[in-house]
Length: 178
Image (cartoon, rainbow, N blue to C red; front, side, top):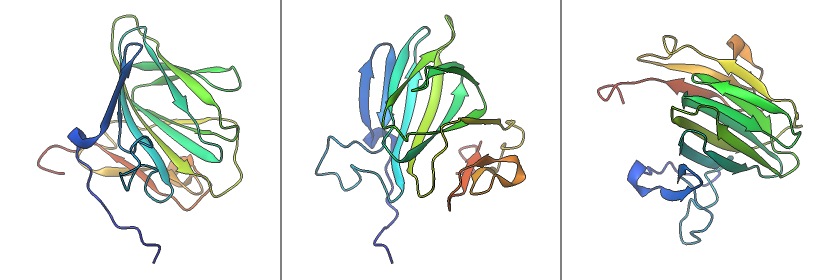
């Protein structure tokens, strides 16, 4: 095999960063060299959860040769990427972008009253990258009490087309179901 073993990382074990009206919880933190998961887990390079105050923002660093999937749990996010083009991502939306230039994108809370709650993951890309973002919305009803495919190699069933051997699922489970 490839030597990878599943490891459980509890929420309270994540690295916490605070700045510019945000709180960012990093599952993998490159600054901790003694952490065996500092540089990710296999092709999963980064996994973070962000909480952004109204009118706040955060910067996401895209690694060269990676794909970033963003999921807005709550709120409305405005993202300004390397192309200087702004996109809006609403609660329930998933967006996939490529980090082919190794640059950053700036994510703003587009609301002046409500907080933004967002999950971001970065995957090492094993295929040609596409600079055009893909964005899909999946209803909470389609994910309530079960997991649903939201990203796949070929975009089957209306999912994000990731172009590589990855299946990405999302679910809205109760404490009794996890």
